Length: 231
Image (tube, rainbow, N blue to C red; front, side, top):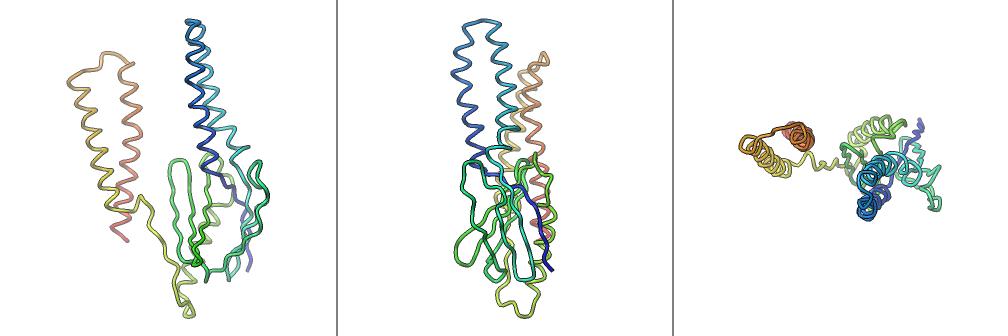
């Protein structure tokens, strides 16, 4: 039975280019307005706030976004680009049979979830989904996709199973190395607080900004190690 999934895809390089252009623009803007004293500092602050919102939350929805219709059946799936990326020509419909698929990898991160498909022909397909624009059928498609792959691999007629590649967060060596590095940074930060001390809130805020993401990454590493151990 055929099923259809409306999904939203993002171009990572377009997303990164937008943000990089904004970051580069900060230097000339800051150098220009610093000459105006407090007024210039206020203008720079407003520019940073508005620029961050535009570059990271608003503009990507227009420049880096595409709409994709995925149709699936028992033999495979079809990709129809309903709305291509801004400034790009419409892509041709792409049909992928299950017996053409060599492996797949699904990676979920803080910003993007990515499905990578590797075909036996050597070509690859990558679908990126941004966490801040996730009101679509991508999760439903992934659930259906994994079940379809599992059923295909169990068929007696299947000569070569479709492999599930491990994500970087399921690689034990990588996780241990990153864990050790984060541990060193964590300990160094604590020692800095002990020996240097923090006399006001201005000193605490940067420390919290550093430790917050580190704690989140450590949690991800622990979960990745647990999953790698199970598999």
